[in-house]
Structure formats: structure tokens, C-alpha cells
Length: 152
Length: 70
Image (cartoon, rainbow over all chains, first blue to last red; front, side, top):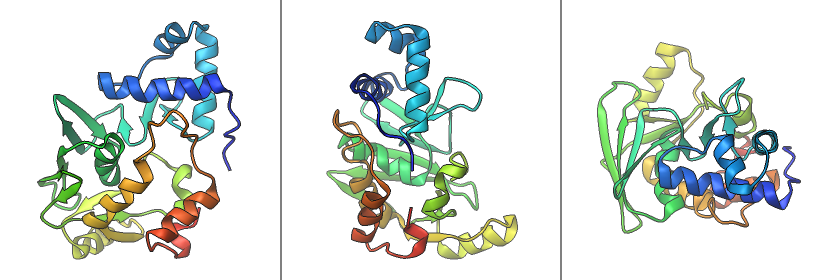
């Protein structure tokens, strides 16, 4: 069970990270979070680590850089989501639908079929999925998701 | 969570790669799951979910097997 007993400021930093990520199509650095909240870089780094430990986001291993703030990915993936004039990478097939779900937006999604590598397009319009079939394989049971988040 | 055109392709993929076969849901069902899982993710008062809340969410979506238990 992750530690979610975080300070109000750390939860506010979490909200800032998500808003920044949506607006800028990338997560904020710890320096950007420090500037926004008037705190030291060390305090921002500690906040990022606490949020990662609480499973609120996932850091690139060995760094203080955000790799995932689900459903958003900071690195390119086979799942690209277009919303208005923005485009985002999603962590996985589920997250490709999680981005329009989170934003309450229509979306056009480009993904690659895992088996063939073929480009697949689907969309969300007025809260409805527009897709020509498609299935999602959840390879790991929920209890194991945080053991290997990159490959989940 | 990877996208496939068919459940048969999932089986072929697992045989080819040795990846364990987990659970396969239609994209439509995953959309409904995404709606409840992510709808409040950006809310200022969203502080994550307890394992019990995750379990209840999946059960409410008809996903009640041990695979979906946190």
C-alpha cells in the first residue's frame, strides 16, 4: 500500500504537474515546480519522489524526471492522442482512452497494433468511442502493476 | 496494456513472445473503464484510491476475478 499521507503542498504540486503536462505536452521539471511554488529545488525533488512513492506518478529510473503521470507519457509510445491543437503520448492502449476520459474531450487516436505493427485509428466523439473493433491485453494482474510499471 | 485487432492475435502474440496471457477486454469496454478510472484524475481533491476503492471500481465494471484484485 503506497504512502498517500502527503502534505497539502505536495498534493498541490501534483495538480500543477497534471495541468502543466496537459498545457505544455510535457511534464514540468523540478526547477519549474520549485519556481511555481517558491520552494527550493531540493524541496521540489523531494515532492516528486514522495508523489512517485505514493504511485501518483512514475519517475524515469535514477532521475527526478517524470516518465509517466498516467495516462500521460513523457516519452514517445505507440499510442498518440490528438485533442484540439494538442497531441500527447499515452502510456498504453487503456491510457490512450484515459486522456480523453480525463479531459472530457473528443480525441483522435493513432496507435499501432501490437501483433502486426499496423497503424490503427480510433476516436472519441461526444463521449462515444468510434472504433472498428479492437481489444486490449492486460498482461499483468492488478496486484503486480507497480512491480513493473513500464511494461504493464 | 497493448492493443490488438483480435483475441486470436493476442494468443498468437503470447505464443510468439512467451508473454503470459492475462485478461483481454474489448476496446469499447476499456473506454468505459477509462471513463471511471480517469474522469477525476485532474481534480484538485483527487488523492488517489485505496486498494479497497480500486477493488470496488473493478467489481462495479464486472471485473471481479482475482486478476483484478489489487
